[in-house]
Length: 462
Image (tube, rainbow, N blue to C red; front, side, top):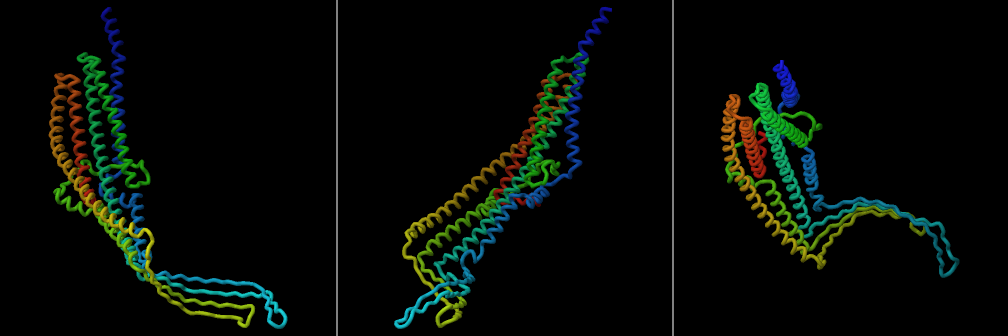
């Protein structure tokens, strides 16, 4: 009887612990079920979207691109001969005037003649023309400047499109990276759940202590928390993608068709540099240099005389309330030529000196941009090469870490490995998978940046 009481007391002492241990499996199942159900729901609700489809959709709907295209159209509308002043100005005018008055006329002999209520009026209408025939080539310079501004606006649109494609491509592969990282964390949670189950069964038969069980629970909670945080990062990347593509709703599901980074084979450094020298930024710098030369030419035009042509045709009728003439009608045209020269205005010389300095600055800015682009390309190429070597090394590391984990898991099942050592093997595998993800994404970012700099980003549309 005494032994029976001892057994009952022992069972009563372990029952609460058994219940608490059994709750681990329920919590784990709940978290994993939530993650898997969301993944399955996203896959079922949406068709996987390729990068090309994202780019096509974004290029047609993105608000920033639509704005800059409108600005390009405005620049094209401004580049006309009319705005440059090359064409004449023609105006039409008409008017009416009237006057009411009275007068007294005193002759040398006789009485004073008084007139009251006299009313004279007149109507006139005409067409006037004004045309600057020559002003030292200033008007021609204005037209050339407007054309250069039109070309600059087109280059700015091209640069904005390239930058947008690079940003969207980087975010798309960031989504791929975040999804792969979430898969790794889900696998880690599943491994932690299996470990909790094994520890719980061994604790039930008394081969492990409660400390081992609690440590397994702590590791499981840590993996679960990391998994939930990663789910938030994945959702943030999805929202950012919808924003870049100007989607009507940011809450719709999204699934990328690519499951891996898919690195491209890039041309050589010299080939990339040749393409970089024709990039949009270099084109803009060249047009700015042309504008500086045009501004200098416009400043020098003040050293020349100007010739203006004026002409018109009009009609005028007048009605007189007094006098010998009742009505007078007049019509006809007039033409005139004005030739002039600005002798002194106080600021001509300073403006011309500053214009020459502006030409030199435009040249220096172009040289500076060339050096900056070459430096950026060299830095990105070096980073690209280093990340490729690092990626190859991390691929070897993840193979070794996975084999190390498999061996540790077998030994753990046989009872030859402690929970802490098993956790270390699991953590080593997770760290190796994280490092290879980072190396792949960094290599992809370098690839995108090199193509963005050289203007070859459209390869992702193929």
